[in-house]
Length: 320
Image 1 (spheres, one colour):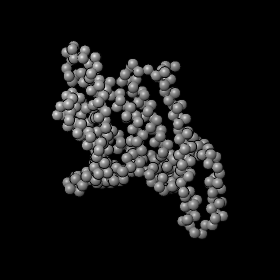
Image 2 (cartoon, rainbow, N blue to C red):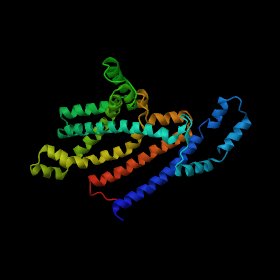
Image 3 (cartoon, rainbow, N blue to C red):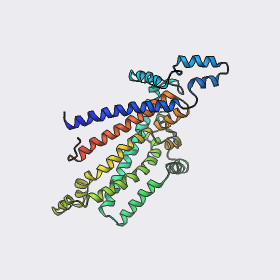
Image 4 (cartoon, one colour):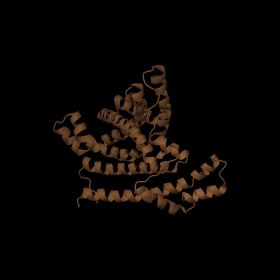
């Protein structure tokens, strides 16, 4: 078996074990929350007695031990039955898939914009360290890291939606068809809010890594051979300098997938973060369970993707 396939197989086995343990931990934590579905039914209908509640708990298996209930849920989930959402009265997948699409659209655009800004800003700053433009790039990066997302979101709404009136204050791309407006107009403000902070973090990491790489011997050799500064930065330094950034991106994929709860709430964007929050607060056990496990799976996938990108960026890296 090749090293790449061996790495992939080992990571998949590890991911399966982590997901199994996380499913039990999440199921146990949700089970400890006050107010199971039967209790909510009894409180909503005064005609139901305590005997009715006991019969309903026996019918739904809520009177069984926690491990036995988890094993029953796991066997059903492996068979493809993820249950129904109590809040939406629909199968869990029918509720999750639209939210997943909205999150991928929003977070994907925010990630691409943040990376584009970070690469350009880091190259500009690292090409002339300790100069005025390096100071301005660092100042903008620190401003992005320090600015609270909720404050920036409210500021953007006040300027572009209220004062100028050129962009909608909230909603999602699903409203574009009914309003006759392009979906991207709904995504501009939340994407800018999320990308601003992320771009500052990525710029700081990439700038520091570039300054370290530019001190290496092979960079001096490339310059001695007559390579221009732009070629040295982009062709020789950037690829190695991007390795620490890959680590950060791999760890942040789970957070991006879960969604920025504050940003989604302010802009009324129906994504995964807001959906998981509503499911937990509404005691929608099936929806919260699957949503949290899906976020865990994406985090593990991001870690695997980072390992594979290491091999592409630096062929000298070997995994045992």
